Structure formats: structure tokens, C-alpha cells
Image (cartoon, rainbow, N blue to C red; front, side, top):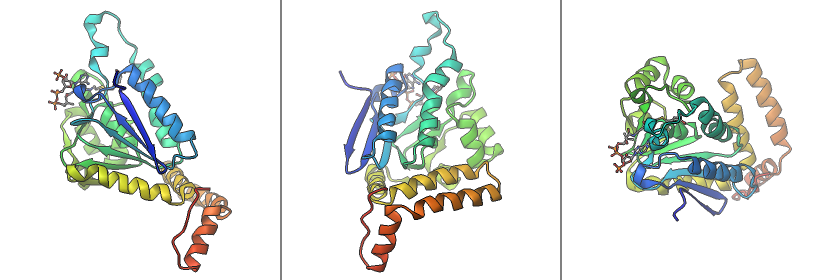
Length: 261
Ligand code: T3D
């Protein structure tokens, strides 16, 4: 049977593909279990130095599989519980892992699918993709971090309108608004994402992981706290092999060989 999440590891890059194309890669319980496993490996495996998350077929992810929420099936599902079990730990892990996570958004990203994409560090989207806060259409609020991400990146005015109307935000507009890093021609999406991942996997991974953590901390820290944090992390990195190699290779006018430690 085809697995709903595929992984492929090569040259330091773990590629994770959501693989239920017939339902636009909507999340099922099984998919969440496999995603948890894949991201746990990405976080703890020292061989993994960059991650790409993408979707199979014409969509990236249509959020929760609504057939698992069919009211005619009787039981009322506790959504606080499903968020606490499935979605929140995934978003927390992506934010916590000190490795770059690139999301290659190959098509429509709706509901929690949109917010999972936007939780990643670098979002590259096909020009055919769109982001939809579909929740209001079924009487819910944006979850999987959506209220946090949209408000921080876009401000309340745009966050509220996107969430209340569920209007699709085309990838090009998302790029113009600074919600994502880049919108590229659909045919170039995976090459662009893979080139970036390969270059990050060859880079000074320790410093890149710390860059992620320190930039994330900036949204809640004061300038003083941030200056302290920068100094403390820089102190740590100043003792790393990658820093030593970076400086040495510069002085010797050669390409660095970073080991990520
Ligand atoms: O429940 C909890 O645990 C709480 C957490 C909730 C998180 C959430 O994500 S809630 C939001 C859930 N998602 C949605 O409400 C989006 C539903 N889908 C759509 O609105 C549309 O499918 C799209 C706008 C995403 C794409 O539209 P379109 O016209 O390109 O495709 P389509 O024809 O609607 O969908 C193609 C197929 O995928 C279709 O199946 P079929 O008819 O070919 O057999 C459709 O039913 C299926 N599909 C799409 N989205 C879902 C889905 N099946 C199950 N669940 C879906 N979310």
C-alpha cells in the first residue's frame, strides 16, 4: 500500500513528501503519525542538515481530512485534543529544530496545510499555488499557528481579512506581502528548493540552526535581551569547528568544508 508520507534522504537533505494526492494531501491520523516520525528523524539525526517539505500531485495540503470529521459518523471529535496531539507538536518541532526547514508549496495549501507551510523557515511556492485560511467556511478559527503567523507577518488588517473571508491568497501576492520567501514558476519549484537545501546542507549548519533560534526569539525579546542572546550564542559559535574552518578557508582563499559542528 502507498504510504501517505514519503521520505528520501540524500547528501544531508531529508525530503518529506505528503502523499495522498487524490485528496490534496489532507491530513489523516496515519499521516500525522508518519509525519511525526519523519520530523523526529530530521531533528535528531546528525546526518540531516536541511529538510524539504512538499506535497505529491497538484496540491500541497488541504488541511484536516474532513472525512475523519463526518458528523454523520456519530462521535463528536474533541478538536482541542486533535490539535494538542497532532498539529501543535508538529509546528513546535519545526520551530524548535535547529535546522533549516524549506517548504516547497507545489499547489493549494488550505487550512492547517497552509499554516504548516507557513511554519517552515523558508517557504518557496509555485506560481500556481495559493494559501487559503479555509477554516471560516466550516465554522472554525485558523489553527496550527495560523493566527500567530499571519498576524506577525502581515499585521492584523490582512490577517483578519484572510481568516474571516477564506479568500485564496495567490503565491505571487504572498511573496509581495512578505509572507513567503519566493514564488517561482511551477516547473522550477523543486529544483529551486533542492538547490537551496543542498547549499544549506553544505553550509555551517550549527550557525544556521542558531540563526533560526535567535531570529525567532526576536519577536518576543526586547532589544537588550536580544543583544544578550546574540552575544551568548556568538560566544558558543566562536568556539565551533565551523567558525574555525570558515575563517581559515577565507584566509587561505579556498572553499570551506563545513562539518556542521
Ligand atoms: O479537525 C481537527 O483536528 C482540527 C484541525 C483542523 C485543521 C484544518 O485544516 S480545518 C480545514 C480543513 N480543510 C478545508 O476545509 C479545505 C477543504 N478543501 C477545499 O476547500 C478545497 O478542496 C480546496 C480549496 C483545498 C481545493 O479545491 P479544488 O477545487 O482545487 O479541489 P477539490 O475538487 O475540492 O478537491 C479535490 C479532491 O480532494 C476532492 O475529492 P474527490 O471529489 O476528487 O474525490 C476533495 O473532496 C478532496 N479534498 C480536498 N480537501 C479535502 C478533501 N478531502 C478530505 N478533506 C479535505 N480537507
